[in-house]
Structures are given as C-alpha cells and as structure tokens.
Length: 216
Image (cartoon, rainbow, N blue to C red):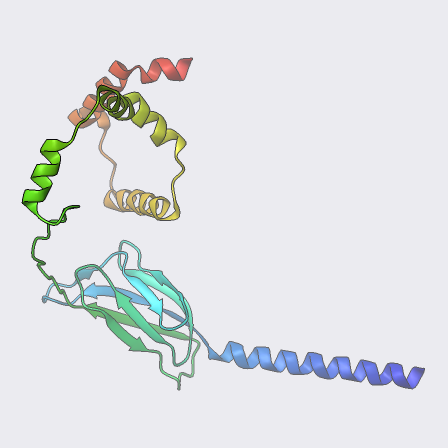
C-alpha cells in the first residue's frame, strides 16, 4: 500500500513539474507590445486615435487611445494588423528572436481616401415605376393617425429611455466622453453659463417640462 502511494506521489509531482515547465515556456513567448500610431502622410506627424489593432488569425486585439497610444500582450511571431477609417491597412510581424519581453513601435499610417460614386436604392425596378406606385398609394386616415402617434415627441422620448443600448453604442458613448475629457486636458473647462447652446437646451427642457417631471 505504501509503495503504490509513493508511485502515485511521484506521478503527480512529475505531472506538476511538466505543467510548470510548459507554462514557463509559454510565458517566454509572450511580449508586451506597445507604441504610438501616427499619421505619416505629411512631414507633420499627429496621432491617429482609435486605430484598430488586431492580432491576425487569433480574433483578439485592441485600439489606440485619443493620443494614438496602444498596448497589448502578443506572442513572438504574431502578425499585427493596423486599420483605421481613411487609412491604408498596415501589417507588422513581431520578431521571433527577441531577448526581452517588451517591444515598442511607432507605426506610421498613410491616408487612403476614396470617393465612391453616388448610389440611389429604390424598392422598385425604376424611378418611373416608383413614381407610379407612390401616386397610387392609398394612405387611410387610420394609418396617418398611427404614423403621427409613433412619431410624436413623447413616444420617441419614451423609446429613447426604454430601449437598451447595445455594445457598439456604449463603446461610442465612452469614446465621445473620453475625447471630450482629452479636449480640455490641462486647462479649465469652459463655463456653460456663457454657452448659448447650453442656454437653448435649458429653455427647451423647461418648455417640455423635464424639470417638473423630475420633481414628480
């Protein structure tokens, strides 16, 4: 009984040692990849905010902040794809012979603006057919009343408050908030008491009775 217990203990220790060695080997392949994404189209370099940084064929990545900075953990030999709206995609391969577990890069992006021709989509085969169908369309008073009710300000306001935001909308809202904070970084934000747009929003809310509803 004791002999079998010793054999089991030795097997467990051997398995644990192999796991630790494999984990160490995997850790040696990891690299903290960071840097800046800049516009290199002209001599005056400036950041390219919110650039998509994707690890090719691995389905994960990150994006640069408002100043163009990024940081992500990758493996040696990974191919990194940089993409941004209005710029050409750039690929960069992490060197496999790195001695350190950190690697920095300043990636320059080249503008790639493409003007697409105008496209008009109709639910009918031709413009003339659409005109005939539109003139022949019979909109009953019931449909008109339903459309007016659905487009009422109260209905739209209730839908804005009740319909949940998806992941993309939340991410866009976070980016706008971050961009606004960066816009006033290092200086005192302006006072809205001197902002005519803020005053207009205040009067519009007052006319709608927003403050009265909050009190209730």
